Amino acid sequence: MTMRRRPAMEVVVVVVAVGCDASVLIDSTSGSSAEKDAAPNGSLAGDDVIDSAKAVLEAVCPGVVSCADIVALAARDAVSFQFGRDLWDVQLGRRDGVVSLASEALSNLPAPTDNFTTLRSNFAGKGLDVKDLVILSGGIFYK
Ligand SMILES: *[C@@H]1O[C@H](CO)[C@@H](O)[C@H](O)[C@H]1NC(C)=O
Ligand SMILES: CC(=O)N[C@H]1CO[C@H](CO)[C@@H](O)[C@@H]1O
Image (cartoon, rainbow, N blue to C red):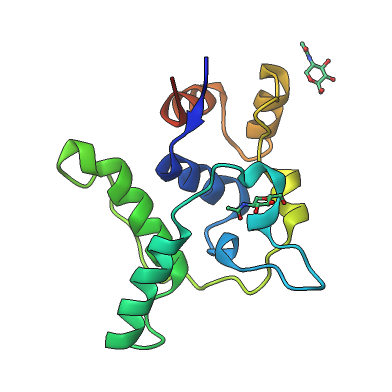
């Protein structure tokens, strides 16, 4: 059985795990490895879509819409799309993070090899219960 993560739901998990400041979009520098280059990012995709949306918005109204808000809207829209309506409201006004450390992704994101005990503990550390774990896992993985 091959399990693949859905990028949209992975964005939701990243937002929950690391925070919603779009720091996962920041590139690594020669001196610092960024979140996007941490091993658990393996299937994270779509940052080019966020970059494109940001470029269009910057051309129309520079310095107004944060990447963090674009990620939050894109996650909502990607999940809602199949239902033909927005499943939740997105409050806007997030500010983009300026720090992105691979070490934070490693310490906050569950690994694909984590067992249930570890996952339950990891989620509890974020204020999430077993029901949240089941719902998010069901949304993330498919055959
Ligand atoms: C779950 O994984 C942790 C960390 O690798 C390990 O210490 C623990 O024994 C495992 N629990 C079970 C029930 O396999
Ligand atoms: C898409 C992406 O940035 N993948 C990176 C995830 O992290 C690994 C390990 O650090 C990198 O090799 C990938 O390029």
